[in-house]
Image: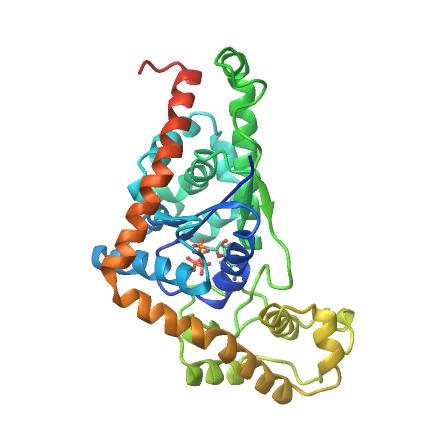
Length: 340
Ligand code: AQP
C-alpha cells in the first residue's frame, strides 16, 4: 500500500516557504493517498527551545495543518513525541547509518556553523530520526521542499542498507526481499524553494533575523503588503519568457511565488506580466497573497484558540499512528534479533 508521510518542526511561525514547499502539497495528496502529517517536536529540540513556546508552537503547526485544509479525520495528524517508536527505530537506524554519511549533510554544516564541536549530537543525528519518521510507517512518498532532498536520499540509503544487512532475517521472518520501501521524494511545482524577500539567493527561513525576509502565515494584510512592497528587486521590467529570469534571482522568486499561489505556471504568469514593471506586479502579488492567506490566518487563529480541540486531534492522531508504528517496530525487533 502507498502511504504519504511528512513532518514540520514546531520551531516558530510558519512562513510562505513552508506553506508552498510543503503544506500545499500535503493538502493535494490527501485526495489520493493515506497521509500522515506530523509535527516533529523531537526534531525541534536539536536546537534549544523554550518549553512553553515549544508547546504553543506544536499547537500552532497542528492548527495550521487543519486551517490549510488537511482533514484530521481522514488523515493522521499528530506530534512525534507522542509516538515513542520514532525514537526507538532511530536507535536501530543509527547503527545502520555511517558517520561519514551524516558528516556530508549540508543542513548540519549550515546549522552547526563554525563551532561544529559544540553542536548537539541530535543536530548531527537529525536526518536519521527523519529516516525513522518515514520508515516506521513504511511510507512510500514524502512531500518536502527542495532543501530536504539530501535528507530524503539519506533515508533511502539507510532503508536500502537495512534491507541488505538483514536480508536473510527479513526473508526468514516472512517479509520477502525487502522490509522498508525506498521512500520517494515528492518535490515539484513552481515554488519548491522559496527564497528570502531580501536576498534571492538565500532560502526563506524562520531563523532569518529580518522579519522582512519572509511572509509568515500569521501576518495580516498590512504586513504582507509592506513586505512585498519592500521586497528586493532589480531595475528591469519583467521578461515575457521564463529564460529571461535567469540571473535575476529576486524576479525568479517573486514570479515563482505568484505562480504557486495562483496554481499557474511561471510561463503563464509571465505571459500576463511580461513587460510590466515591478510596482504593477507587486500590487497584483499583494492582492493574490492576501486573498489566499487571509482566510487561512483567520481559520488558524480560531482553531488555535480551542486548545482542547487541538490537543484532542493530536492525541487521537498519535493513537492511530502508534498502532501502525508498534506493529512495524515489532517486525524490526524480530528482524534485528531482539527478544520480545
Ligand atoms: N524556503 C522554503 N521553500 C520551500 N520549502 C521550504 N521548507 C522550508 N523552507 C522552505 C519546507 O517546509 C517543510 C517544513 O520544514 P521544517 O519544519 O524543517 O522547517 P525548517 O526547514 O526548519 O524551516 P526553516 O524556515 O528553513 O527553518 P530554519 O530557519 O531553522 O532553517 C519541509 O518540507 C521543508 O522542505
